[in-house]
Length: 113
Image (tube, rainbow, N blue to C red; front, side, top):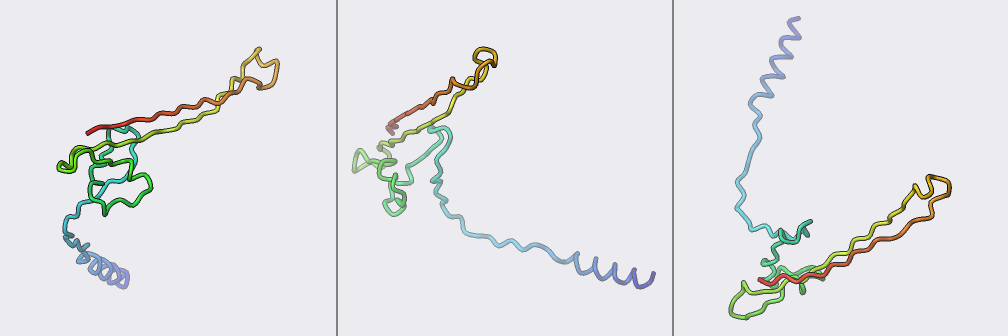
């Protein structure tokens, strides 16, 4: 019993003073290069700095319109969605699945700032 109390005190005593250390890092501008579900949530103005252009699509995500003003630019994008549709209740199940088709959607957009 006495040994158990000593072990408990040592384990609790060693665990209590251990605190997590947080070091304050200088704030850095984090560039958000992710493609969003809604295109109006995207902001590609960070690409005005040519050093940040790394992706193949960066050349069309930021096209400057006026050399003197950096906030005048065009962003071009698009999306392709495909889904296979299959109707399984033709003729109330008396025949196998024969009514299947591919739906495709192509959207091209231009955003002018």
